[in-house]
Length: 205
Length: 205
Figure 1: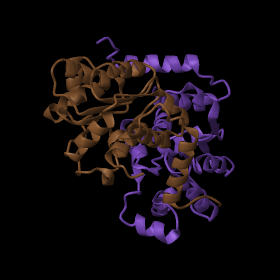
Figure 2: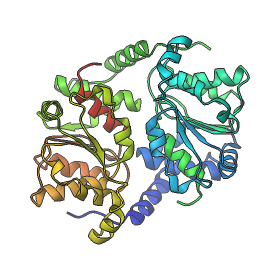
Figure 3: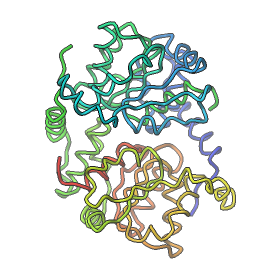
């Protein structure tokens, strides 16, 4: 069969296609580079039009990672998608969703397991890079915790996906005062979220 | 903050929204149920219009899983997205991408690591459910192996994503004679692929 078998060449051609087709003109350079990688992960160049961000998000997240901050993920798929070789400080990649304490905790706080899992992040939240790519309830819970005085993360990649609460949770993050990167609306997910973390972690394309 | 905190209620409302908005009329019932779950994973109801399938794919994949077949994945994210509690026979979920033999193998066969990893599936390919959600080269490689006489899988969920080879590899799967489920074009990815496997694995919504 006829197809491109060279991984580096596939990357080059993919990124060239994205830069030719996507309208990145509204984005600062560092955000645009992250968005190119997010588009690469989902195959949709029009994603660029739904990006929301705070101007300092990429530099804040990158500085935190270089200083050794952990990456706190809401879902195992997000954690699995973070390319460890791109991390500048062998950073911890943490997902507490499968912790045995989570089901009882969810029942006690009257929320989903995805939301309850955040309560186990504890002091690691201070200065962390948070990557929420699945559950709107996890993003809402994060905002509640920060409002209630929890330690503030350095940056939040908040890109939950779906039909109930996804758009609303990302709107709430956008006006939270936290450094943030979102895809407005229903779209998002673990692959795009992990791609954003991977792009922030290293300037290498 | 005001948001729905009950996981079961979120599922119910999400699936009701999808069934109200998505045009599933061209799909047989068992495929439509799988596509609802795939849409749930990506937030895009228009995904239904790009679905390609062989009529027997859901029943073939379900029968294979019930008989204990393994799920062979091209990417760790796909494997991470398979909900183990939905599997009917505590099925193995296998991804060989991080096997230490893969880099040298990739160099020897002149292909990507994602493609080379399939050479380690060996006899497990016979009657397996294959789930390719990331790399077009992995799907092309699978088709080459089967053409060359490798054991045939029971079904292939083939939904790689991206700009170089994704659409073409899914077209090639569609005419391969294998039981298959695809999303035509550039869209796809590990979340949608894992969702399809999860839907096939159990009839529970």
